[in-house]
Image (cartoon, rainbow, N blue to C red; front, side, top):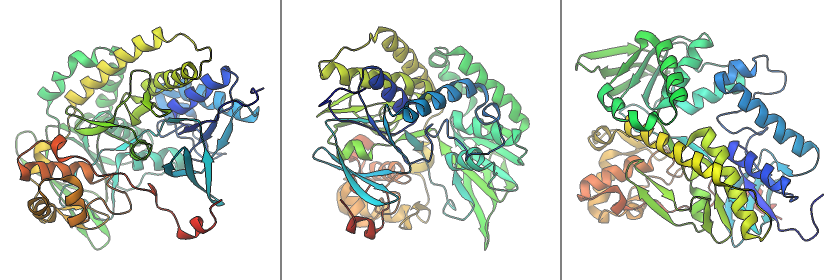
Length: 455
């Protein structure tokens, strides 16, 4: 049973980080509230299909099936026993003065908190190429969601492109499911991938699993490619034009393209909660600042890929650490963290190896032709961003106001990183000097009628 007058602790996100944070608090006899957008807990990496789905966890999660099953079972038991409150199918769309505005099936409700743990995860890091606005182009994460949640391949003939471990993983998962994967195109050349060897050696078993998945792809996998443009007809994508490592032009017919360059931290709520940010040169993105335990100040704690891009195992560790920091700050008994801190350091080394081996394609983005679309929501071209940079003095938010890049449905999740690279090139400075788009509420699309019912 929870203690009377216990502090109200809210966790946003029910992936590995949120689940471990919740479990740590429950063990300390507290009753957290967990808010998540999905129908069932698990997050993106351990996303669960609807009830009655026939594919087994081994088929869905591969070598991570045991971890996924353990997390699912543990969280479900805590929820069924009433030891936590689980708000599924709910999106936090704003944070203000210790209150969360939560959009659910019944409209918007306000939930207050004394302590807030943000475990918001990450999404695909997208880099625009000419033609990526056409129907039939998806993120790698979207392709994986469709496969896990519904057992669906989003195309009859598929090309995957980008860089990072998700590129290989999704390709292998689609092949195992029987999909026709025509090509898997990695913009990182072999020699660059080898530069990350020291960091990747921090987790040799994981690295070997990645190589095994790569071997499954066989001749479909090409490293060091140059992506030129996506061709499309009236019904969507028809082909991808690209050049291989030998600079030979290739045309691959397809009706679906999945793309992504590793991960982009989901930071909008951290921004609204008042967290400070710093530009990370290796990850080429702005990340919220927190100590090694996840403390970000003002009663806010950060865990998982929303603050450190360490993957599912790192998210579990970070979730425990954030909850432990919360307990310590409340003056309550807290478990030892020495083992978790050591593991976190090793996972950080591995993650930096990934960032080195599979970099963001800076040159490709900075040399986009003027007519290429950068912001798909508002149909803003690279030329318009460059022109706005000339008028806006190289400031991210001035360029946003002038060009409307980042003002659409995704709130810059897909276009901000590319837009900032273009502005930095035009202004002759670093992306860190350009700044980042300010977060604004609502951070997810919300119907106006939901606010009229707000309580």
